Length: 128
Image (cartoon, rainbow, N blue to C red):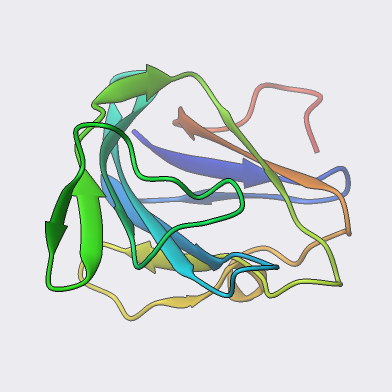
């Protein structure tokens, strides 16, 4: 299994068993990171880290503060993630296991709308 990313106009399949998504909150300018794992046909949210809080960025009640970073482990499963990508904010950071982090646009350019992520071998027929 890997991870498939798709916009309305393009798609890419990546060989990744785990990855980290990072982004900077548009108002608070605080970094938020999520560690994901591919398990069978779902994505598992392993851990979340946030370097502060405010304006919708409150740590979960079970979060623990370590050296200025709140961290918690939801371990929830998701069939797909829908990431809104706008030209008015910084792009998501994509960090695949064992590689340097890059802007998501280096993996799949944004079309200014939603990018869908899911566990996959390949996109079904008829999907861009």
